Length: 429
Image 1: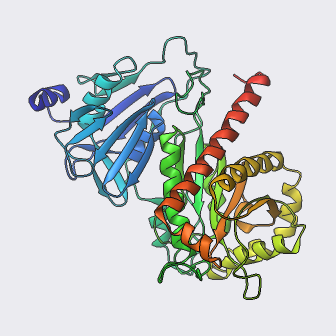
Image 2: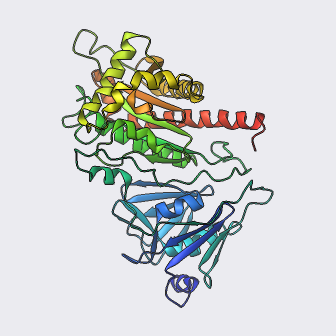
Image 3: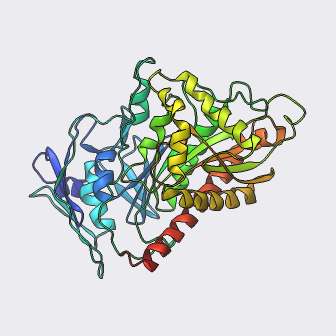
């Protein structure tokens, strides 16, 4: 079997680049030989519309509804009950997942034989549209940047503290044409969707200290843990997702929503609530979900002040946002995404409240800096109170984090299903 895999690539040396031809266009991707013959996952994620999740020593890649599960540094990949030998091993380098070239040239065409074909003579992987699917348009050829791929969040952490680092667009599938596809068997979704998940705080900004968190754990840690689980849950549902930060790093508030641009459907910021010292401090509990609009209650203003206070950790350039907040909020109240953000918040709130041990505090609105640059539906989820013993225990438990992430994912899928129904009714292909 392994000898056959070598023959699949061809007797000659592996190509310097691999070309990927899909109904969306033609892409050329460089081949790495750093630790074996491999390609960087972010460079093929766009052309192939992959959803990629790395959890510890395991990486899951979802392609056309098939889940390929890799164990890092192991020359095998599992697809359900099938196993493909790989010759080379998947590995992480500079926070980037590299996948063996043989997976792309042999395993994928064998598992998805009706969709992909590899031609070793030309170094071309071709994807055909499924029977009965009409592609609205064809994109011009795209050449992948051959420079080393770096994790965007880690790159931000390498920036000097006094320099405002503009948030680069994450390596996600491009918007591409709309394709009529068979519904996803898990969710019923027909179109490709991309979600940006923002684990709040990070780096020298710990968020709230967490009165009832284990020693050494702060809000930023809980936010990242829930964000990573949410990314994995969305991937399992066939929805591509990316994190604004994957490590303990600080990203300016007004840069975070900038990750959600043309290739993005919606933005979700994850936080933990807290109550100032007083008689309400240990009593207040539960889940609430916010969208961007002018605060109407003192409690909404309190939460906005608490989250917006993170701006003091940022560069002077970032703090110019503060003075313009009122103007931005007023403008965004007329924005086409206001109603959609409120609907997204409602669906997420309903789902999380059903699994949360605390109070259902409902959908709220306030002027959060982190949402001001979003030009897509955007929400901020306060997942519970670190100043409440029961909430604190729930938020720092693996079971609690799984329940919250799964419920947020369900709410997101519910919103996307509604969106697809509206597009269908409106005559959008």
